[in-house]
Every structure is written in C-alpha cells, then in structure tokens.
Image (cartoon, rainbow, N blue to C red; front, top):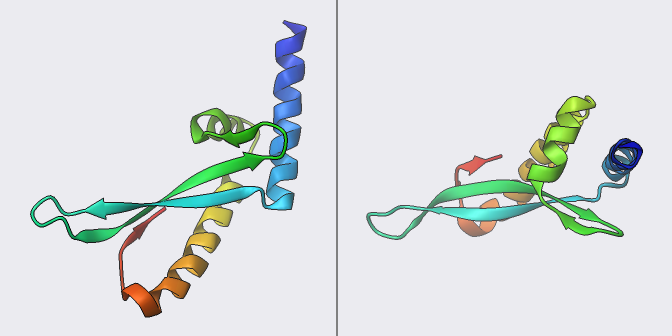
Length: 100
C-alpha cells in the first residue's frame, strides 16, 4: 500500500515537472468524411513523452492531472500548441476545423 502512495506522489511530481519542461506533444488525427473520404478537419490528442517511461497514454495521466489540479495547465498547453500548429498549416491546407 505504501508503494502505491509513493508511486502516485512520484507520478504527480513527474507530471508537474513535465509541464514545466514541455514534455507533452500533440498527435493529430484526421477526421474523414464518410461520403467521399475527404478530410473534414483534425483532432489533437495530447501525449506525454516521459524521459524514463516513454510515451504515457492520456488515460494514465489525465485523471492524475484532474485530481491534483494540473488539468487547466495541460489544457492551456494543448490549446496554445494547437493554435501555433494550425497557424503554420494554414498556408498549406487552408482553413480546417481542429478539435482539441
């Protein structure tokens, strides 16, 4: 039981540090129209590239971020990064809806 609590505290500490170090990335998934197969927009999916554990799925870190009050910071990072990425793509793909 002590190990679970210690692991949880370490994970929270790692999460706080990851936000400071910008260890998060966004993976973009196209949203495809079924009628004609064209791209209708994109969905941005948050990923954590932990320096020791590798890629950590959102299902593992989002609940922890919610419980320790870091979810707003993660959301702000995701929105800012998505806006920057979309601004860079607009010259190539034009306007495209983006879900974050």
